[in-house]
Image 1 (cartoon, rainbow, N blue to C red):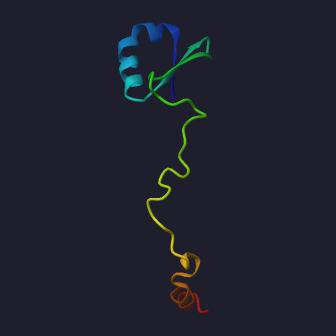
Image 2 (cartoon, rainbow, N blue to C red):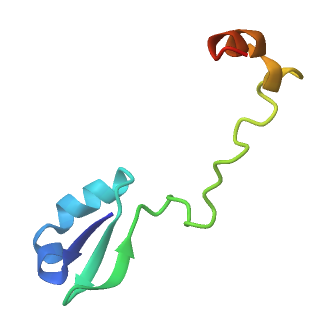
Image 3 (cartoon, rainbow, N blue to C red):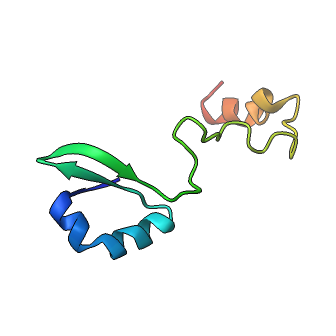
Length: 79
């Protein structure tokens, strides 16, 4: 996430807000210390973003998944 100082944020506010609307938030800093984070209004909070299990129920892992190709692998490694 991009960090900008207060003066730069004032100078480039329109540009920075356009990026935030596209999902690229930014941090406003004062003397190098972050003081505010700007993100799009509809972006999820950090704790709300859920990635694991987002395709649940859309496919099935075969029962023999951990044994698939074991003979070929054993042959490649002299087993």
